[in-house]
Length: 236
Length: 236
DNA sequence: CAAAAAAGTTGTTCTGAATCAATTGTTAAC
DNA sequence: GTTAACAATTGATTCAGAACAACTTTTTTG
Image (cartoon, rainbow over all chains, first blue to last red):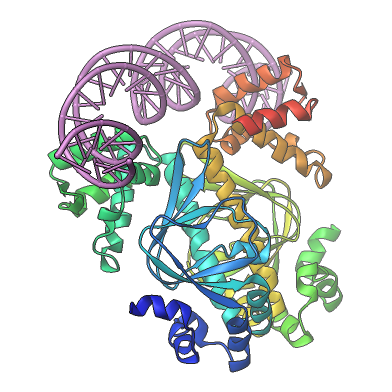
């Protein structure tokens, strides 16, 4: 039998302890961990499944055990804007706990993803009881905030070249955790990260390749000249 | 003697108790309040003074007692992007506590502003001790997050008309708290809120006026037809 | 209060990047 | 394994909005 599949169905204490290894949950007292445990389910999202859908009711928070997803904003129905790649040990839909009760963005699995769903009341309760846990959550929010501010800056002050350079540098930095990251993404995905059209993306990539900044082979993309790319990113 | 000035200089317990009325601090235990009290100063920022400067070292957090400021991103040196109006009882530069140690945005006083500066360690300590306080801080972060996501959506999916409509509706919604809000802002300020050029702003406002959506008199601006403006905002 | 600086206004020109259209390569489905 | 749907590519066309230039009005300041 398939071990992964079994694990999803038969959930035991030892699985739980294993799963809750994530640093973020280590600081919980036993009774607090029990609150989380009691109100969680583990779910397997298949590649291309939506983890969250912008606008949908959100009664729970997602915590990625393993797998990768992309978080994006939906707009006019034609074009999306990709905000980030969600990695293991990260939360999705935290805002649901603290203000909105709908998800304010969508996310979709790039690979199969093992995910905890935790009821939002459980998280709220633990946050209120455990200041250190709360502090950790705030840190995450804070980073997201900083990232969003950078996003706004990029959209406001940079044009195509700079944005695409940013996108490539960002995705490249994820290769530590997921070497095949570029194979998971289409030209349209890259376009949606940079906030430009797919056609412009293709033209830009060709240009970057011709200028010896990157190397395109098969579906993979390698950065050849980091310095120049960083300079393009910096100059906008 | 000037009463306001005296208050800045001569700080007494009764002043403190008065100042710490802000709902956000009500939930602190006496000893926690003392931690905040011990590491704070009260400062008067004059109109046009910078409360925070993007990139500058941040060892403290600001809490607005009264007065209004605008928060903005600096870019190419020519154009800024205005993120929001900061109102009494709001924090500025919270991120400094939890991740960055530089301010990631600038802010400037639109009116004279009475402000607490609280050392970031004090806030960090209280957050860790008091889950309810932490919960409150998270809520604020969460709202800012939602606002930033909407900002990104606006920049990505709307064009001039929609963005200006948004800007006007946002600023108009502040009239409850500050009726003269529009008199505090120049055309360039409105432009920087909408993320468009000053010239385009002037042309748009004239158009909106001609179409009976708004009324311009002196430096003030009144929304005449909310429904149409909301429709323009919605359609982008 | 005069002069200089800054803010607001208006029409014209210019440009970055989207859109369109047409084609080729690739993957999925029957 | 052939056809149909989808992803990638390329060049030509179009457009929203910035940049520019020239002018007026308002505000600041010596």
